[in-house]
Image 1: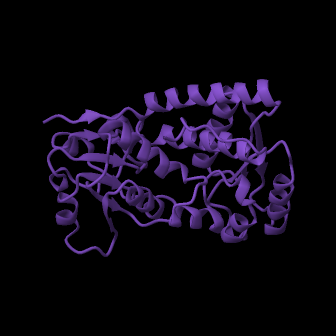
Image 2: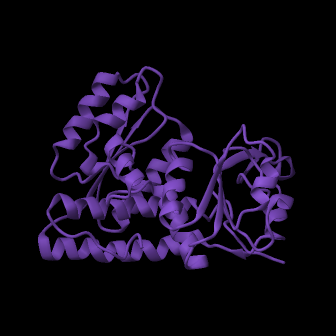
Length: 300
């Protein structure tokens, strides 16, 4: 068996096209330009690349992009003051503070300071609670992207056994809630799960979000299962030359692709969906803040 490759890059391109159409309509019919503010503290290279990509794609779909780059020694008080200004800025409809923040800043305080109405990555306690009890509202971007790829690949997820490997607040926990909404039977596995390989072997859907390169081996995968690899790990690649590296996921891709029914590659799978879903959430918050019904075709 050779797995179908789930092309997240292509899916995200289509999603961004729909987003651009809704942005144009908001501008033309209501005089509203959705605005996304991204804040980064320090100069972490990976975060810099990610934030730059967010800003570029925000502008490409016609939104206003507000990028705030702060020095590494920024105080917690100064960062919180910026968040409060953005909360009160009518041109800003979405706020994202890039994590991690430097050690002198309490990330929880920063997250709690973001207005829930502008929390486009569903980090605030209010929005996490809405997801927990099934109320409408923003959904964490990476889990939402995973869900959209699963629906597109499988169709109805009802009755399927899903195993999520990883229990982070960013991916594992919200992914669990989304799959429960889809009427899956969900197991959340983690570092202390006994007989992890056997647990994974029973899964129709595997979502790998553990942050360990190629941890999930091919012989863990049930034949025909759908594998969503959230991991992005950089490992040495001496075959490419001294000091060279390459990106791999949390799944041993070649092994798993020989057994699975469908699988996301790394890169080009879940990653592009995260930013696209961030833009979709910003259109939603811009609509709600202005008393308009949000689009129904962006996150369905």
